[in-house]
Image 1 (cartoon, rainbow, N blue to C red):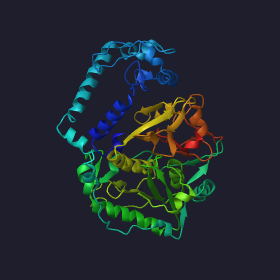
Image 2: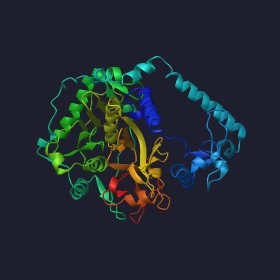
Image 3: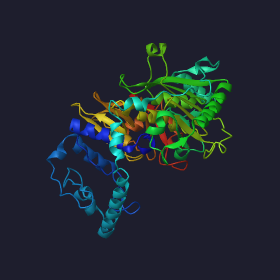
Length: 468
């Protein structure tokens, strides 16, 4: 989640620690990656084994297990047995065939951990934590400057298409030649072009106002001048305004009404409209009557020709202004940039209110117990949250406040490479009419070949929550 954390890591860590201590939460580290050796030597952990381990945690059986003594490298204790799981898998020192290589790898990893934590062992730690008290929020708020451009009201655009229903959106996508209907499951299939994933080196945050002091600047949060951002935003807006039609979606980020934000996303492409309609919380007609956006993202195929003289890395620019709560996406058609732009802004705003924002999936059990799954992309957050014995809260972005864990989104964005109906039946069944598939190859019968990664290993499917 580091790519979407504008504030210093210590700030999120302090909030997370407080939540865990207050609610007496249990924390487990579950390996969903490689076992038996390093990457390429061992093998990927079988998903059925992972589910058994997770099930033992969620049903409480793991509390009856015997645990090993803490290991000498990370002070981790391993359960010595779990029903239906080979005991060797539970303890990596037993699972690795090459014991010497195991110890060398542990020593290397331990040194990397220690080196990484050095940067957090400084006096500034408490300064950052203190910012999140009642006296710090006024300082962190600030008043945004007036933009150097006129914020257009795209609803007044003569070709504005507003919160289209599913049938009209699908018609627009096919009519515009942006995508096609998959014969096998009636979903929409699109190609994201030259970018099949996010562009982290072209992602910028405006360095101005309160954000100048609050943001953890570096290779992840790359600063951009406010004047440059405004030029890119205006370039994108002019492009949208010149088109015969634009697509405007109004909805919400955050299912808790006390902290949710009203979101407006304006796009050039109809399939992007379909994507954000899937991924954010749809408003009622009553909520639309007096809708005023707190966050605005615009996305077009505009080419920002002056990128070199403005100090940008390329003509692709994905930028957010945390002071004015606006964002721009141009030079890439990868849809995930829009949802992550909104999440980055929420990841900045929610902690200022004492709410822990999290890049995770989450479920709730029959007894009201909540499980939260953290992990990098591709480690199983979406897969493990698709559990027939538990209700899904969400698969990627959440908040944790005094009321509990809540979803920031209204849909799921699942990696579907090697999607197997037998191993992941809920996700497979969710890919139907109303879903959008990205960069999938179809076989001669029009059936998605989820094992084909010839376009990208980052094949994706977005669908609304109620598909699960």
